[in-house]
Length: 167
Image: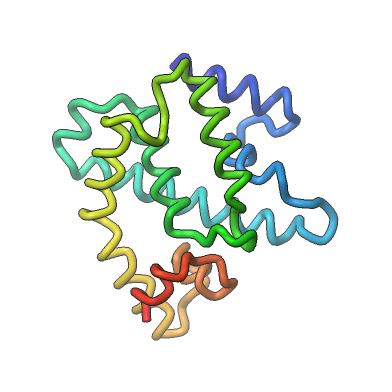
């Protein structure tokens, strides 16, 4: 709860009330990039939300991990699926985001904390292969408009290794 309040306060102070993921794209230029920015946020939001929802299927996670840890791990995993070359979320913006979350959480949420690392790896092993297969199926059937990974692929936002795995 403390993390949520702090994130909402920070988002409000930055004029982005209610959209914590908006903190990820502070480094993207405005006018020409607004649609692109909205697309990146949509893909990140949908991937993160889906992964957080799926975490309920992991009994040990549901019983032991605080919701903030699950949400943070979901965002981290979603970021690994997207390219770092500036088309999605540049490395500098990712690093700034991670630093802000660490400060706001009082050091509880870091990308290298054992709990977050273990959860992110477990979610990746358990959910990502099926998500990639679903995205490939949607793309193959021309239904990219609904699946966040298929949308990311269509707009060149996927990390190269993820792109290869979709085929």
